[in-house]
Image: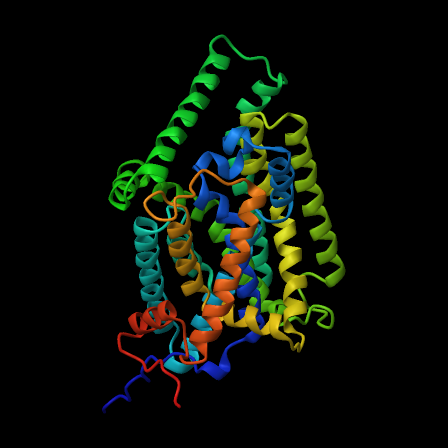
Length: 427
């Protein structure tokens, strides 16, 4: 007897998109630019250490560093990771219903993640070495093993994993920070070793600055291949320590209904609104305490590293969990106005905006183009961020008035399903 064929793989219709998630993605992609602008404009060392800014940084640089450390750095990447987890689970659940099979839906998601990894590698190689798409793809593949777990178990595993991962990262930076502050007596030669190791980082930053500020585009590509390709190994490690657990937490919030904004009314919600507020306050307080400690230590190098890569990620976990729940509840409310509309449009094409803004920042800063690399303080960079936001708002509105999806979203969709879809809107 002939068996009925399985329904074909088809994407979700535009009218079934979750507007609240798009609005949150819009906030996330704008926030990521705010976090990354220093990495576009300066050597890697300046991303977390104000001493690498022009003239060793000024007073405004230090206070803006504190503000960003408390409320920006790692937060928007984390928010985007939670949303990526929600989107991953949403994609599989909808694909299961349309294709009548969990295995087929998972295979489709694997193809989708493989394509995202490819986009990330191209973005890394040609535009920006601070890519997060490759890390998301690696983390998403790992998270697929947890798809069928209930929300409570997803949350528990994600939180425990995230805390352990952040704790291990903190331990990696603890010893030099203790030695630098005098809290741990240094054995013979240890202080000299740490000083020499830091000088190596300063020398590497100086070499990077020469290429980025004076080299051609070909010079930048050669430098990235020769000196920065090893970052891809770090991004795989980051996927294990941070991305997978945050994806699991995002999946848990979506499965529980928290990302539908129902935490105030749903007695089964994983985290209540009141508890979410407490988590946000605790996370902000932890970040503020760590940031003030760094300022009190005069931004000594290893103390700054320990806070930025160790204490900050630990404090970010409660902040992200509570903040995502409160933000989701806010985003789910019916709202009008140009800002909500523009944020939603920016979120609908977050992938195109994320990669596109890397192209713009490259043209603004690198020496062969705009030539501003290494010249601007953090306050001046905020003006560049505003320009980037305006471009994302304008581009998203103009493009989506004519097309169903952003250009990269459309390519990603076509590659996932293996056929070309019409993208231009009628009329």
